[in-house]
Length: 394
Image (cartoon, rainbow, N blue to C red; front, side):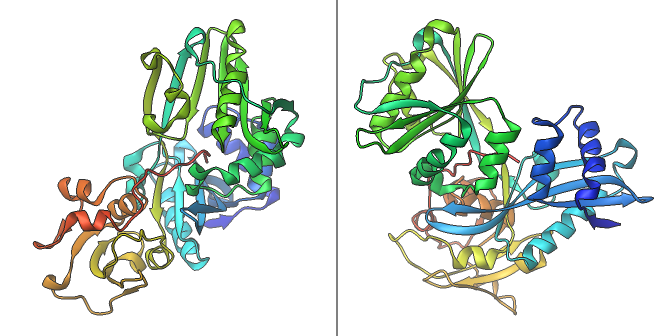
């Protein structure tokens, strides 16, 4: 049977996670329990003992100025003797029903298998860029007014939160980080990191870098700047460590190499190794609410009818009329084929609306089927087309 766990179950839950992932979760039991306290812990029990679990973390995301109520799915685990008995499928179905009832609009998920979670309506939405430099090739950055200060986590956290909030990149599907999330991720789970804040000449925080040392590698964990002065100052600060390290590494949540500022600062761009890495999946939980709140681009406005297939959410499965202002209603009576502008599934629709793939790309790939006279390019002028960014993990 499915249960939502309480604090009295955390030790048993931790034991399952440790067994299933073959390691102690980063940060140990203290960090894990803190995370569990701020999450919904779904468990499938056999003979009164936890056999499978899924942890669901509530949060908000900022998508081009629209705040969507969301969840992050993580720590999906089962003991080997119970795998294949349908426990995870039952848990995921229950979670989706509960999310819809609770007003959740979109859900993110860290997959161990992209194909496995496509069964539940999830699809790849995020990438990141893994960057590596020889220390001698890291750009120097320009000298700027203002100061860099290394601070403790407690001193740095409210300053970093302000910079993160003001960075435009963090408005493309990223988390609106709550204070507890900062405490969990950087104060407990990844304890022992270094924090450097750039202050402009007026004393205002405008950038930060979070980093650690891994042998002879300088590892940049997070790097956020709101101005070019902050970019130059933090680049200069990082490069000042070059004499003590062989390599620098950075995982950027920005997947477009032309928009990663540090790459544009390199006098010899070919001396950085850049690898595009697939990252998190997402699914729209409540399609009507997602569209009703969607930040439509202003270049074109038109109404349309779409047919959507969703195996896991009956409320998303059917035909929908979308007005010029994008107020959406599900049609009680299926329209005639000639009245449908396009047909698709929830996975492809999520990719298009989140800006991960264009409407034209999805049509070309056969993921969207359009009416004969449909102007495909017009639909790409409706939605946000820059790829979404997520700097966090579940």
